[in-house]
Image 1 (cartoon, rainbow, N blue to C red):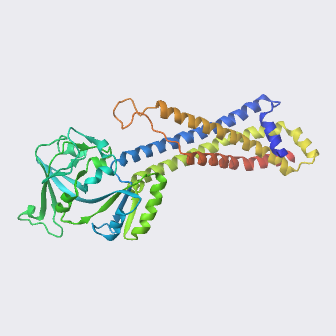
Image 2 (cartoon, rainbow, N blue to C red):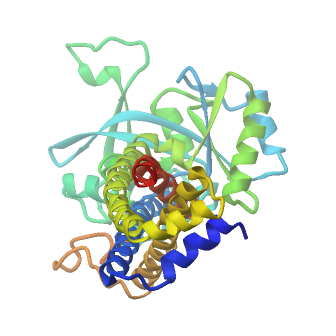
Image 3 (cartoon, one colour):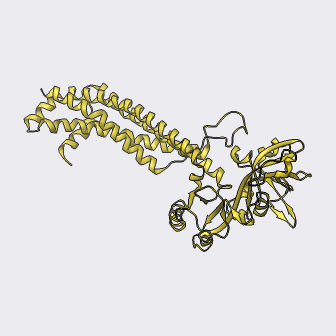
Length: 411
């Protein structure tokens, strides 16, 4: 141990001639600890909401989504897509065709998104977990075609989970102008039966706009026989690291004509807003941390005044001015490090208590929110970032004032 660090450590823990210096040093450590704890808790809450939203989309969005870059439909027999079926990493390959259509029910009309999917859609996620009603999930049977509506869409049309009369669906014929004399002749028309269930993703983007049905129904309705708008993939033994790796491999395999997106990229707008909010909170909390670190300057100033005789003794023993400045800088770094470690422990502990017991609730109205308590998720990357931030901010707050005060006293 070099003597500068040894002296700095002794100054921190030894009893001072003025008891107020000990109190101010303790307040400095506590101030840094509270600011650090606030950063841990705040960033963990943002992580919790991000994980919550990701979980909501998990039942509806695939692990990987393959779409053409030009936004047009593609042939279901495209050689590049057929190669995906042979990939060792792919467990389920689900062709999809989406398009806009008009549904009519009892005088009510609504423009919706028809999502036609293959029968193995249940292998993509946990769609059974978001179904509500007395029926069962079914896309087609014999000559009947079924449509599973989003719960908000069903409410807008005034339909229960099971409706007796078939839902009338209209889609414009590609490349045709509307016939003013007979407008319906310009539209393809078909009917969807009710399977007795609706789905609820808890996101209006899907719940208020989507109808799930068979791929064949969508291809006939939109005159897109043998065409797809996308392909959904489920990976074997999927994990975050595996998804990223496989995504890169498939993108290289498919080439420039296609783009491969994971769940976060599929909902990029939602998660980008959340990342920006988290970044802004981090920046503001860093400024609060900087203010807290200024307390360390007051503690070091009083300590240097209290140790004037020790400074003269150190100079007599051969210590240079730079080495004496280093002693007090190390004193400040120790204070900031102690506050950082204490704050990290307190922050992680509070997050664990919230996860286990849910002490802080979302509101007093039960059932008004998707969850009853604030979600928290502690990322170790955030812990490392916070620790580095505290030490860096502490160094910035301490370096010049200590250098200036030390030189003043040495003169």
